[in-house]
Amino acid sequence: MDVRLMPNPQGGYQFLPGVPYVSSAARAADGFEVVRASFRRPRRLFPEGLADVESHLRSLGRPVQALCGLELRFGRQATLEEFDAFNKVYIDRMSKAGLLIDDRAPIARTNVAVPGSPAEHQIHAFSYTVPVSRPELQPPPTFVVAATPEVLPPGGPPGVAAPYDTSPEGLRQKTAVILETLGSRLAALGARWSDVTGVQLYTVHNLHELLSTMVRPALGEAGGRGIEWHFAQPPVVGLEIELDARSTRMELTVDT
Image (cartoon, rainbow, N blue to C red; front, side, top):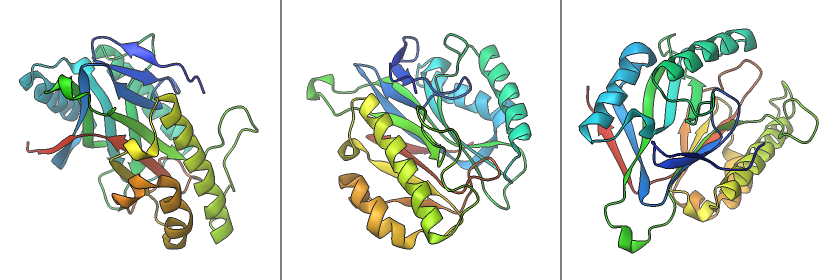
């Protein structure tokens, strides 16, 4: 993974490059902070969801480039081919909206399958930057880290940790890889787990024992603030667990 933060001057944040269609994380630039907003009723991503996000930002006097995080939901896990096809459409729409930096999306993204939800991708929540209200306080960093599945980190053998293994040991191996990757992304942002104000876990498997023996100890102070569990799956068939993290001082619900 490229650990150099890239600037998004129009957006008021820096981002950690990932794959072209999603950044690994985004951190507010000096003088800005990240705010998270969730839709009371999820909005279909294209066209109305992104338009609603832009309208919300415009009402705050912020450009659409201030968008730094998207939390998406859809109805079932996709094959790799289906996921690639979606991402081609996604990157094209992001380009037309003027959101790309050097042909890559700077927006950190969570993209999970929720059984029983609509088949089309919907926006559950989004994050964006605003100027800090009291810069003299020198507040701690605010950021959003993209959802991370059990994909093995770059630099080693490619693949998935404990592929197709949902035994207790397989789930442990998957969770260990996810925590390692998240820790690396936080370090690249110049942040620590103690800076994290929100953690979301996405899986349909029973991780109760791992939460108490592995996840909670690794998160430290962040774990003490609670872990929000969603009965959901990573976007691609063959993946079983995802975790994301964020640091915010303000969160709100948007009615549409």
